[in-house]
Every structure is written in C-alpha cells, then in structure tokens.
Amino acid sequence: MKKEIPLTYGKITFGTLGKLESAKYWNESNHFPKSPSEWHTFTKNVILSINRFNGYDVFCLNQVHGDTIEKVDGFSNGSDFFEPKEGDGLWSVHKNKILVVRTADCVPVFLYSTKRPFVSILHSGWKGTMLGITEKMIQELLGQGFQLDELVLELGPYIQKQNYEVGEDVANIFEELGKEVCFPKGKGKFLLDVGIAIEKRVKRMFGDNIQIVNEQIEVFQSPQFFSHRAKEEGRNLNFILWES
Image (cartoon, rainbow, N blue to C red):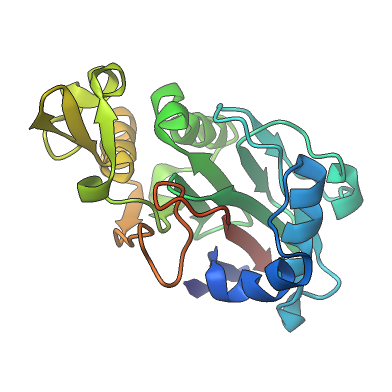
C-alpha cells in the first residue's frame, strides 16, 4: 500500500511496507530484529531501499503501546533516534523527514494537512486507542492554529474485527461505542474493530469536519502484511513524509 497526494505546498507520500519489501533483509539475517536499536537499523534499511528516499532522514521509536508523540524538528536527523526514544507517534512540519511506526495487528494512523506542511504517523492498538493517542495529536494541532477541515486522517492495514477476539477486560473499554466496534461472540469473548473505534472516538470529540478514510485492509493471514495473531514475527513498516 502506497499513496501519493499532490497538494499546494508539495506532495504527501505515505504507505505500508510488508512482507515483500522486508524479504531481502530478513533473508540476509534469517531472523527479525529483537531490540529497539536493531529494529531501527532494519527499518531504515527497508525504507531507504526505495531509491527516491535515498538521502532522506528516517525516524522511528521504541513503541510501548502508549500515547507519547515525538516532534521531529528541522534540525533532527536519523542519528538522533539511533537509540530510539519511547513513544508511539511522530509528527513534523519539515520536508523529507520519513516518519515510521511498526505494526503487526494494531492500527497505523496517517495524518496530514491539505493546506500547510504537516505530517504525522501514530501506532494505535487497543491500548493507544483507549488512551486517545489520535485525539491527543489532533488536539495539539488545534492548539497550534490548525483547522479540522484541513486535516485528513487515514487508517492503514490492521486486523479486522472478524479475526480479533478479545476478552471482557478489553471489551469493557469499548462496548459503549456499539456493536459495530465491539461485538459479543458469547462465553465472555468479543470481536473488536480498533479502527472503527478510532473513527467513532475522533468524531465524538471533534465532529464530522475532519476527513477520515478507512479502507479496512486486513493483515491477518495476508500474503502482503504481517500479523501477530497469525504468529508472524515480522512487522509492517508504516511511513509518511512530505516533499516540496
């Protein structure tokens, strides 16, 4: 999955790299990374294998299923994050900064402005969604003078409800969003759609002015993407940047 959006200030490029793009680097070592610094190196190698990104800076984090979002400024480069900071989101107003989060079943949230330079990438599993990481990013933007009607929020590939079973402890957090989000399966089990949960929470807080895109792309048992529930070790690399 990769999309390019031409805008008045430049071009937004975002997407998800999965099994095909990771194959070369996995085959060389015969295992996936274990530590945050190993994942950083692996991520950078895969992203920069896209020729047009050579020379760009790549940023990723030591993800902890939280709601910390790091700002990438104009002076930052990839080496600043060689020992990745803990967090689950990145944002920047500067060009040629490739922001990356890794997912296996969780939702990658891509966010950008149609009117001025700004991009963000968020990692939102059920914990990050419960903590409101997406709402936190939008609230930050509103505080800086952005308008809701200039923001586009797109959800990348994630595990779909029919394949994501959770127990009552998680279901209790999301049941109030309705059966479209959390469907009772019986015997204390529920089917959860984290992507639609994000949509509903954002609309509840900010209304309908923000554009939300959710193509509901499945990762479970996908030939293209990795899934933790499918007992796969790999991670999907979700990236976004803007270029002038």
